[in-house]
Amino acid sequence: MATAIQCRGMTVAFENAGEKFLAVDAVDVDIPEATLTVIMGPSGSGKTTLMTSLSGLHTPTSGSVRTGDRELYALSPSALADFRLRRFGYIFQDYGLLAALTVRDNITLPMRAAGRAIDPQRVVAVCEDLDIAQYLDHTPEELSGGTQQRVACARALLGEPDILFADEPTGALDSGNARRARSILRRFVDDHAITVLTVTHDPQFVEIADRVLLIRDGRIEHNLDAPTAAEVIELSERSVAP
Image (cartoon, rainbow, N blue to C red; front, side, top):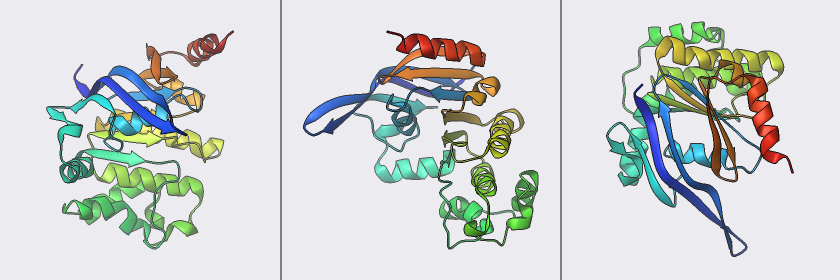
């Protein structure tokens, strides 16, 4: 299977009160194309830092991150920003929607920023697929949290990214909307061949994942192909056992 994104020897160091610590510690990992990969681990384990470094949002202290023939952090800041805009999609826990813009303007903003043509019919089709077409002229503050999350999904899907990065995409949702968000991300993979990488505490993601990475103290302890939730829970508990 082809690799969507690869890192080798990636380390991310921070300094706090004069003391250095490693948020990501010499990680090697390959993320296969058109798969749903879930990163899980306790708070402070480095999972979000790992994802932001893989996604071009945080420059690692050392190591390499490649997608295709591109070494991400060898690009200039402006070239990297342009690459992210054209090739990557992002969904954040706080949705990242601009309050002053309508849903229509929010979901088309990245395409307009990239200078890409916008097909109004495709905008409507994507929104109908996610059941938000009736909200196109509304502002985010008029929408529920679950609807705002679907708007964030529509924005990512409309941009046709090669890789979608999702940070705690169900963290602020009730169980029903969380289930719907998980289903949407699975469909990104199955229906559109988009590679999805998500950081989550949501154990229900395990049941739909192609791969689960369990991270602790900045290192990947387990790299699991299609595990069950019970397997993930057992390994997680074993790693913290005295």
